[in-house]
Image 1 (tube, rainbow, N blue to C red):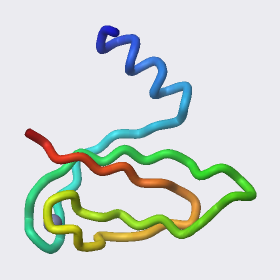
Image 2: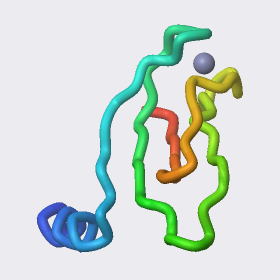
Image 3: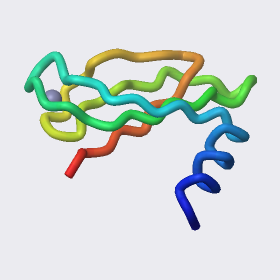
Image 4: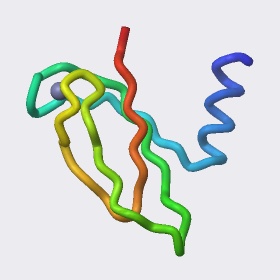
Amino acid sequence: MGYAKNLLIEQMLGISKSQVTCEHCGKTYLQEVTDQVPGFRDLDYDICPYCHEINGSSRSEEYYNYKID
Ligand SMILES: [Zn+2]
């Protein structure tokens, strides 16, 4: 799949991507955030993929963090 098509699917799913710098180790990682399913909300943590420390948490959003190669 091409980049443009991926981007379209991500917009439909309500995924937002950003780069986040870890407060603990200072490394930058790629973060995808999606809305949690209403009625099945749970506390989700923003965990650094490098040092596994917690940089935040949310009851309305889910975090998917990736290392940047
Ligand atoms: Zn870290």
